[in-house]
Amino acid sequence: MWRRSCSSQDPFPLSPRSRTVEAVNHSFISNYLRFMPAPSGSWTGHCIFGSTYSCRSRKGLYWHSFKQVTHTLLNRSDLATELRTMIVPGFTSPNSTTLRKSIPFHDDMEALLGEWSSVGTPVLWCGSVLLGIVFCKLVYDISQALSPVIFPIYNKLTKSEKVEWDNRAFSTAHALISSGISFYLLYICDLFRESAPYGPIMFRGSILSQFGLGFSCGYFIADMGIMIVFYPMLGGYEFLLHHLVSTLACILGVHSGHCHFYMYIVLLSECTTPFINLRWYLTMTGLKDSDAYFYNGAFTAFLWLLARVINFLHCFYHLYSHFDQAMQVHTVGFIFLLISPTSLGMMNFFWFYKIMQAMVRTLSRKQAP
Image (cartoon, rainbow, N blue to C red; front, side):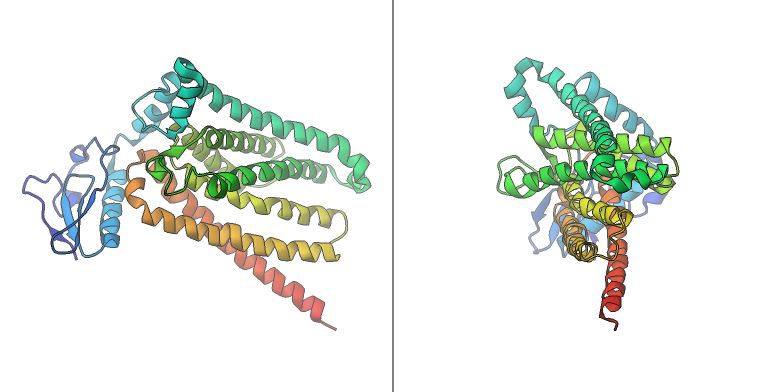
């Protein structure tokens, strides 16, 4: 399918395994695919290694570039160094040129704070994370104080059940806020609209999108902390791993200002969390056989289909159609961009299958004489 059209000086011949790691081009982050119609009607692309290839379809060009990137990531000896230098320069000098500028976030910060924008940016990062942690602790304490008064059944719960009750309270509060911000950014404001004059969608960010990611990062840190304190009462190592990956993804998104669109697609799926928690509350209060429990389960299944199945399919399609922009993201962000939505999407598909099985069993019991 591919026909080679590069010069004899190409540093990566058809058998890249024979090359050493030192042959990898260190301008890896800044280089990207540039598509142009070939005279024959095929597509010609300049891959990240400087080679020029042409193929019959844009899909083939994406796939070949993905294989080249994967090979490079697996053989890069400086990946750990880049992971270190990626975080440090941004905090010591927010105007660092190690990462591409986020639009319109950096412009808005400069317009708002002027020469103080270099100080205001890390303050916004750290402040939003701290606010998320404090918010979770505040809701947890309020739940501890009010639940015994509003719900008499709370006093009859075991210690572990009370901890989970209060933990689900701030989980629900965060889900309402994060999904609300996600819906606004994705479908109401023009930040992520293709026609908006903010450049490539992969590098768009705003003050609100930065704040939202920092706030969610604070939630994941707070939730991970309480899970460690009461381990394994609130979940095993798989939940800790999930929260750790989510925390790192939020930190990368806040620091770089990249890939906010995809991160908010993932955060939008939090809209199912309040109804999942409501199902647990109804079970604890002895209302598992009530109509409220049944209708909540049916609505949860419908919402799961929209937010965690169809929404993620849209995410995958959008990432595929904008893969040329994804190739421009810094290495660590590119790895997270490929791994995080895919792994979460597979989990969501699996759990949707389990939810539908449970719905079928419930309907069968209700129809039984």
